[in-house]
Length: 352
Image 1 (cartoon, one colour):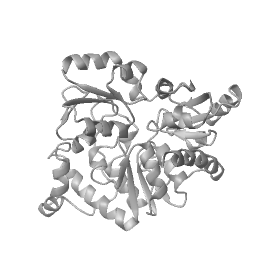
Image 2: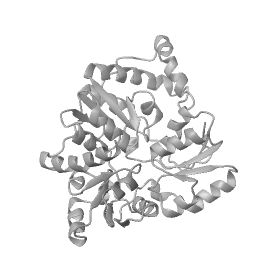
Image 3: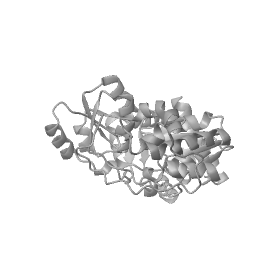
Image 4: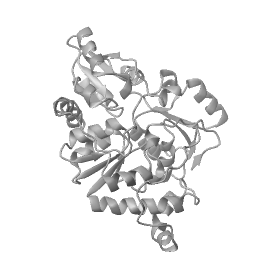
């Protein structure tokens, strides 16, 4: 159950129409056919929304088979994408691993651009599509290849670990990538006394709290997670007796200090399933609570939360159009790809 009584999220944008005509329209026959799927998601998708979503979902799932395509959906996708059309779901690390081993000819990335680039790096022979090329990331925008080369000069001999939330061009300048799920393991695997951890300053600070390796941070931050405060969390505890709070490591230190658990999105999901709290607040992107609620219907999810405007650019409508027209294809410069792939594969091989 998701409690929406106190939410910091802005109202969603007006629904966009799919540009290509749909193969199906809402009808009693379609309602009956889609009833088992709706029974699974009815706690997070309203009866008013379902007649609109169902024809899109049916059309997308048929198109996937025709195109020999799979949809990789990040945990921040909305429930109608996450639970109804995706083939693989997870955090950045889980999706990277799936991208490396899928057999389909086409990968549709239900996520942001750096994720689609990572899929292309790990499956260069496949067609990788992103439904909206504007789906960016504040972290990826916070650092350039030139910045990394400057850091190399300033810290000679110090290995550079880059969060996967960066462009392929930045990855190409680094020694290895990491995700929030494996950042500590990656840093310690290098066997160095000092490590540069870019671009998220708060992830770097959290890693520093978990290891004896000296971690040197960059100045980037996630626009979703940096807006939370420890004071806000303490107010929520006072208002909601018995509340458990779990935070993402991209949050500021005062937020992490106020939380009961800190972990990646996959770690958060596991914690909720294993712990079965009566009431929990996920200090992360809004769609996480809705997606986990389907798997844990006995848990009450308390907000506030913050929307990621970049993730929310991905919709059923533009996923459908992406499959119809095979757009927008993501490519990576071959020279950049060779070096960036090396950094990503080093991480994937370490954590397999």
